[in-house]
Length: 251
Image (cartoon, rainbow, N blue to C red; front, side, top):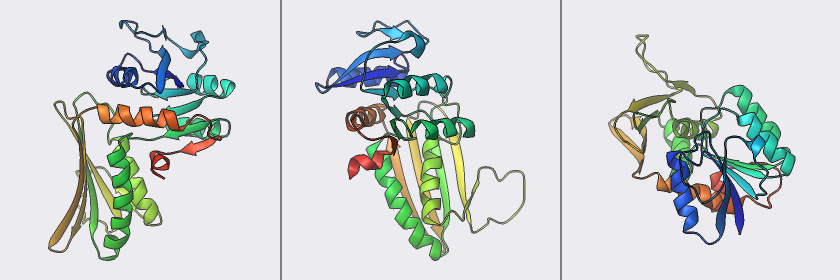
């Protein structure tokens, strides 16, 4: 049995994770962390980690970058791994996360979907082959109108995966409105759409001469991200300190 502390338990994703865990006999949520206290949860909910003294095997964080340092301190002091699903971290916060991986295992992913993580591998291979043939690379990501960060962490992760395969020679272009220039050959364009209740859509476009190849992933429910987080929470306990990713679950 894996004992979970769920940060952001009263948010939309937190509630989806709670439902999935309730139906899984191998995991249990022993405590929640959330500033909102307006849910009737089956587990105790604390407003901060400083109030929590519950023993656990892993933390699932599906909240926001705020108060990251408090969570990292709690985890490193107790030797608890973290499944880090939150995006939008600053460079300074990413440094703190890297420092924490010297003490505890952290699985960090911008997108917990198994499908997205498979696509990440596919676009790496495609980028290596198609860039040599002169194909341009563009990413279009779409999300609901409540999402505050743009581009999405997943879009950036896909761009990073391709750029890594291309020896990090490509630059990212987020906006073309301020200049009248031809597209650079070594750039990855990233466009964001925000509207309605779109759960998540990522399309990678490889545009060549007289042909276009598109790889697309569409999420129809937040449940796919919650399921991935729960699977990761089963994987992480007992692992040595370090940084892990969703692809490690596929090996």
